[in-house]
Image (cartoon, rainbow, N blue to C red; front, side):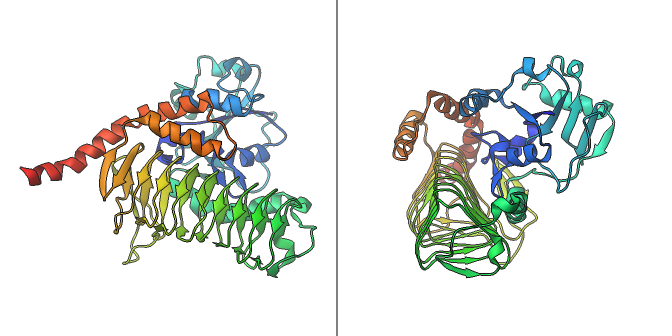
Length: 427
């Protein structure tokens, strides 16, 4: 079967997680969403239909992946799969001989099986119009699973998805290496790659779920890993307490205490400090002693500001959502329900910092202002990546420029609202 992972209008509601990447590249459990979608419909070949500014980056990262390639898309029947959709457990419906059909969750399209003639004129730009048409005209069935609609949805699912990914690996998930650390709970819940380095005086607790340690990871002494948790390839855990429900993506440096959080990859939090119920993008640096609150004093519902709109989360524990290349200064205090965009620069103020900082803005002495020289920020990003042996390609540079332009209205609106009280007082 040929499946095409697509992005619909819902990716906007997942910012800052999706500012600089396709939604199906987001980690949930021990793998990105795309891996779960491909596993559900396996065996399959995969293509992608994404926002145009991301297409070249996706082609560069996956040279064999057809991206926004309508000729490939129309070569035969295709199963369009929403990149925000987390498929259910079990086997998929048999679609090999089905007529066109649409699978839905509520009002969202999870997947739609199409013939080539039905794709005539469809592009990444007008896909939402076609989805509405197919939803109205084709037979429907319940897709099952979960549609990720808001940033906090993916955190609520993460622990269960780690356990699910562990089960999906079958016998490959069983650790064959000798125990050179302390184990609490069943040994059958361990999955440790033979290339991983684990120091003495490390504790793995599998009582509540699996502990998965991927290739070339390094776990230093005085670390405790509480399952379900996943440590990605090349990631260093530095005398930390990694609590249940946590995913650490590839090549991170993590210390302190981390609870029920996802770190997408290549990010630094090597020092003491608490990160709870939070999502951290790529190439983020969190300074020593920085703390994220994840609970209100009155135990009430946490509200998140997204693009100037206050959104009730329905949850009492929500931490911070931090975009790519954000810098969090030493000793910074982030309130519950904080939203920091891409390339934000947060300096400590000795008190809780603003809960919403648009992309390419900074907070200095508690005052929000714009970082309007994006090329200086991109030069810093290039140096950060070079230190890890990664090149900031021109393609990635173009994506960041597009993010800068697309988020400009949010910056203007937020800075205008911040300035109004100050102007009233001065008048």
